Image (cartoon, rainbow, N blue to C red; front, side, top):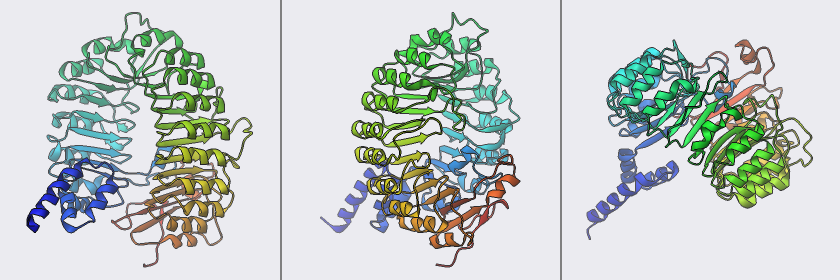
Length: 577
């Protein structure tokens, strides 16, 4: 067989294999084998996630992957979701807009925590609107319903439109009417949950239901009694989120569509459970974060949800509720439990302890995701997690201030979790002081070989613990720490040891009299370091006069130092390397 034939066969195999690889790291490795494979990856890469829009430019991305069909672009870091960034930090789409319109095959665009203006939308939609099948403006800001009108009138082939968590200016419902009139009867997913769009004209929603095969709808605070006709018009609806129950209405004749598999209802009380029970057996996903159920109400409902795979709720569920969940919902794959009121600083209700965690570890053995806020936990309970939840890939534990926790530190428990759950790639522990010693940090480094994203809070005793951690975790790409007792020097040394690290965000560290000088030790090619002095937050009124510790944010960037930062963000001048 000739050399050319061998090359052609190799190209055919790689061209077939590349689209089936899920991990971007695998695709990147293949592209490094030879120039030909690099070029094949360039031509056939279908999806790209840009973890920070300042990490590269739109022009650079277009030159590298000109034929992508799907793009996820993240603006501000995750800390923005918790109001931990100063005002006007950045995250503007505008520099990217001219490049986005150049991608000839782009049909799916997901913007996360990005500032998007109506002008950005007009430029983007005028060029790509007829091709877009999915548009997600997730936790974005800067645009109004004028921008939504442009989308509704131009993007006729949208199958998915998501606006969840976005702050939308001049909210009104005219865009919803135009969406119903102009969409080519293909829209399946519509979400404007947790936005400033609350009161809507239900007739527009009903018109949309008549014209489009809706499968997922997430809206704002609308009484379910107003949605009776809407539900009757959407027999194929599988997911609904956002409606509310009122104590002033009679829901005797109310019912959800028979195919419903996912529900999130606000202000639901035990008296409203008869409206949910008829579909409880078919529910795969249930969000009770904003329900008004007590622990007994949780038990009554969850005991009927035998096929549940995803549950989001608050600590009001109590240990008793977790025990019922463990007995009834053995197919559960994802469990997220936040504080009652979704406020980690204001603990109410019974709280959760090792009793509930042990029940979950023994009864829900298919769990892949576990995020839980607790007031008390033991090493034994964490050991049960490690023994039984081998499928776990995302583990997040917050130990809140409250009752006495008698089994600190949790070094052995954390070690057991990481030893038993070897697939964990996302790991977060925010404890109390004394909750994890330097030895415990060493365990994370030793057994966290697959962790890619990590958040640590109130852990460790000295710099030695952080340095022990940094000797391991070879795949760690993203590290967040808040707050900590580590010095600037230790943080800089650790950053250089994490061989795969792409971003480091730290709020609250042990400052020295050398200011930010020690942070320069982490300097490397394409590395940006930004400092936000604690007083900068107070100047912008973010903390209402409460003192805030300084923040350091370091990240890789092929685009160089950004120029759109506010005066409260100070880029550090790095030495030439």
